[in-house]
Amino acid sequence: MKYIFLGYLALYWTIWLHELGHSYMYKKYGCKKESFIKVKVPFTLFFSTPEPIDSEKAKSLNKKQIFYISIAGVMVNIVLGIICGLSLIIFPITSEANLILLYSFAVFNFTEAATYLVINNLSLASDMKGVADYNPKLRIPAFFIGLASIASIVYLLYTAPLTMAKPIAIIAVLIALSMSVGRIIFEKKQAAN
Image 1: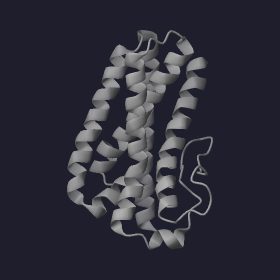
Image 2: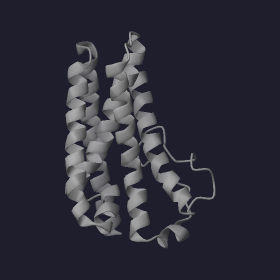
Image 3: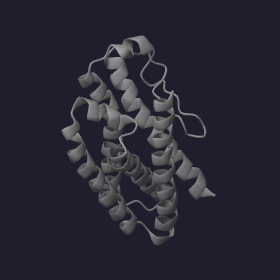
Image 4: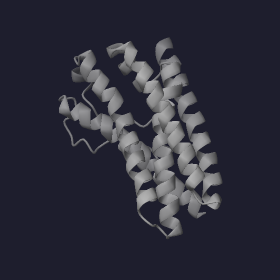
């Protein structure tokens, strides 16, 4: 039960902070009237967005601004994954609940980043469209950063206590599949409309 609760908490924070990255950039470019910490992350976690935003102002953004908004969420995930991963290496953490939470949070942040930078980069969906529109050549380094995120996941799971590694790995695979496929389906529906 504690894996489910702590895993959900880690995943919710991962997604909320990802959306916060986008929201901060929208606020910076004048597309958000309210505080940038107000984002939409439903209990089910699906269809999370940096809303509310001023969509009329957002339509007037240039490609460079859209690029920064698009990549901001992934950058938040990478930075948080690195911070949590290093914390697990540097600091002796003995509490099982803290270990579950930190390993989950680190793995889920790298998983979120990897799904965008690898899978959605190949299928050109979601945030990666803003990257490709700005400079298609940036997809190549983004892909390799995504592979580095996957390597980080593997390392974290290898160093995690065995009782934690297996459930966290299973959840990470399910997250990667559901998020990637969900974004691709969403993009296809948007293109059809």
